[in-house]
Length: 255
Image 1 (cartoon, one colour):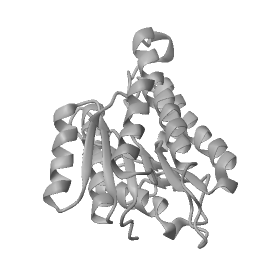
Image 2 (cartoon, rainbow, N blue to C red):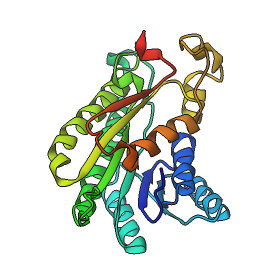
Image 3 (cartoon, rainbow, N blue to C red):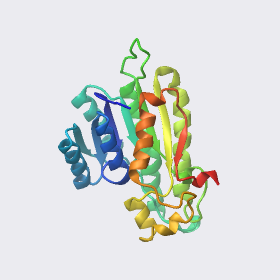
Image 4 (cartoon, rainbow, N blue to C red):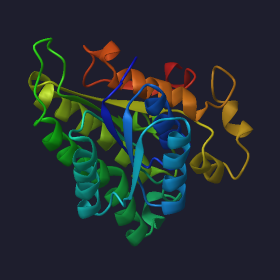
């Protein structure tokens, strides 16, 4: 799944699934532009890619700020000449409380990050990709993967707003895939199950194995396993796949 010479933007690329995907894309030959709210984490991943012989850029990005998102895409195009690939991964988990007890300010923040952040990213990524020419070989103008969740395919007690935001990401993915299918841009989503990330560690109170019991494969997933799915969806190996949500969940949603 060589991506040599292609330019990829990743939001939330400083840790967890985002970091693993940045590294996987770099190993596949892509130039990687990392957007992350935590400057130290984002710069560390860019340096890690450079140490491996790849090319990476970092720009501090808060996806809740439309100007930050616009600047991230513009930076990728200015540095590498075009944008080919994007993984919209930035997200937050919100409060675990019954709906009527959830804080209004935190609720607004969650929607700004998990839903509007993906929308803004897609808007400017697609605008950039539409400027790419389709070659005589019929290659695509670009490919986008959005990060939803297995909770975007179901529900969770106490997680109403987070669940709603991840369902919305799948809806955005499907509708946008139809908008641009004939214009050479593929848009898909991944739906990770319990993955060993800082977010899951916080959610589980440090007890990750409590979640493993609910997984048919009997274990928690690794960020690299989601990253490989993302790289496949972004690559020409998935050239006839668009509007799809791929669970990476150890069989959780097969039950």
